[in-house]
Image (cartoon, rainbow, N blue to C red; front, side, top):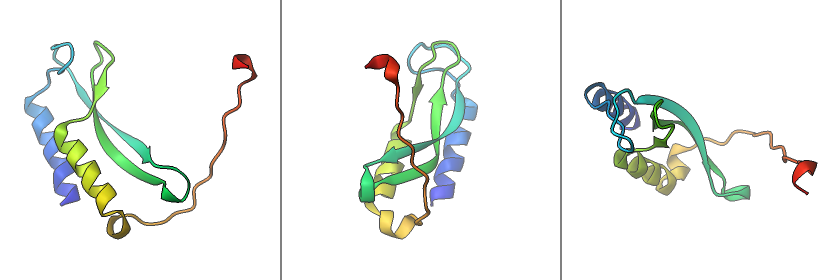
Length: 96
């Protein structure tokens, strides 16, 4: 079902290429990684389809994508696999 969902969004974008924000044609699908929660409750979802407009610079997800993210979060124990992740903390003296 997950694979079918991601294929459907590609099909939708073949026919609907207009940006929901600025209304111009030419939106593109980018695949990103999103993280939810922190610590031992951290869930990382890879390959999330984001609609990106090269004209206005906005990026957004569809309602279908939001529903799929919610489903993945709800069923994380059966859908996610545990992997070790390197974590680094950003430090910037410039901001104080």
